[in-house]
Amino acid sequence: MSAPAPGAARRSRRGPLLLLAALGAVVALGAGAPTWVSGRAATATGTAAVLASGRDAAPVATALALVSLAAVVASTLGRRAARLVAALVLVAGGAGVLAASTGPLREPATALAAPARAASGTTEARVEGAVDVAPWPVVSAVGGGLVALAGVGLVVGARRRDAPRAAGRYDRDARSGAGAAVPTRDDPAAAWDALSHGDDPTR
Image (cartoon, rainbow, N blue to C red; front, side):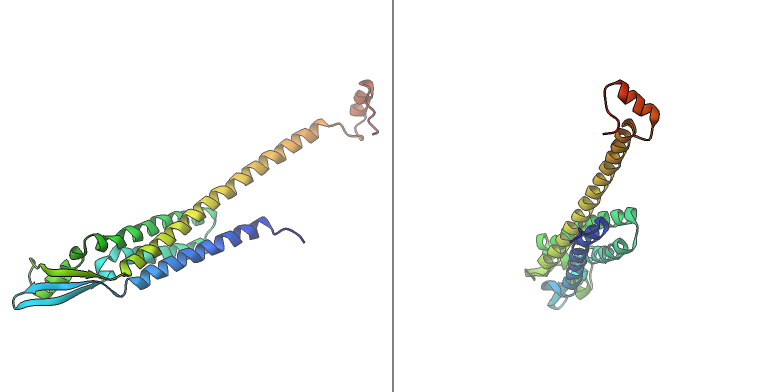
């Protein structure tokens, strides 16, 4: 059985990483639709329920997830340099989704600031009582982590592919230099020199 071609082997390693990046971006996008944070805000007549979806609480996460999906598509269509740039975009985009998704976990009341102002009709709205945080920010953060992990794998794989190529050129040059120093039987002058040194050029 013949070994797979180097190009096919590289594509087989890139394929799962690209699927992982696409999966992470889709997970982050899907997690942005439901409600992340909910609570109650003070109004002129009392309090009102307010809530924020992932796209309201962490709009940067949604935007970077879309950018990551575009980078996956670009990585399948572009040349080697374009694929490396797309891999770097995946690393940065995934890390950005991860960081943006954890923001509402650290400061959930801040995520409700805009809905609270809209509910109260004032710019000094405040959130009353406890704030509930759904698990969706964690899901979005996991999606961003998958994107970043896949991007790192693609970058490392690209650098490893460049190293054997350079080593192969060096080996070919060394072999060609060594072969040029060996006299051939078809060269009478080289054969005579070998014979004068006690070597049999016919062997």
